[in-house]
Amino acid sequence: MSAGSDVLAGEDLEDDLIGSWTVRNIVSTLVPLLIALSVLQMVSGTVLETFEDQLLENPSLLVLVPVMIGTAGNLGSIMCARLSTQLHLGTLEFSPDNPDIRANVGAVIGLAATVFVLLGVASWAIGRALGGSLGLGTLLVITIVSGLLLAVWVVVVSTVSVYASYRLGFDPDDTTIPVVTNVCDITGVLILFSVVWVVI
Image (cartoon, rainbow, N blue to C red):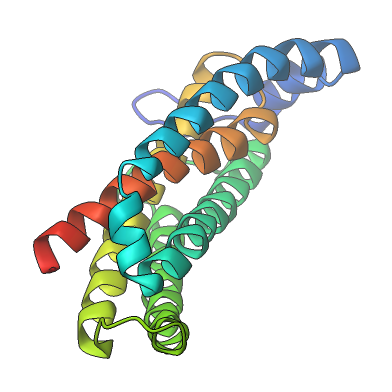
């Protein structure tokens, strides 16, 4: 790392991480991580169960939940993959002034704004077909606000995951995507129903 900055040197990184690219090291890293994340997924299911009445009352929300948390995981995977690539190339600088970081953040927010608008329309249409009563405007507010909040959270979690993984000596390619997708599952549910509670 260069003095006075947070640029990660590609040569040092290559020496550190290539030595860990063995089946034993990958398995020993991922097994404890996946066990912990499996427990987190069970917590996510428990949290979702607490909103059962609202989901049954509003079919549009029932349609919305899996797609929203899945989309958040996809956005997080994109962000992690791009940051990890820059990390391995030795060009990643963890700074708000870094144009690459800003471009990645802008891309994730832009994708979220587009996808969650379409998701709001689709969930309204399916909900109406299933007998739901939520209006299009209400669903658009719910999907856009919760989607953008979730996208910002995805950016934060992805960046912190890549940085922490490197600092702890783990290969971000192994650890960051499982962490981000699982964390976004439970927080996505909480963000969505917090917005639903405010709007409805």
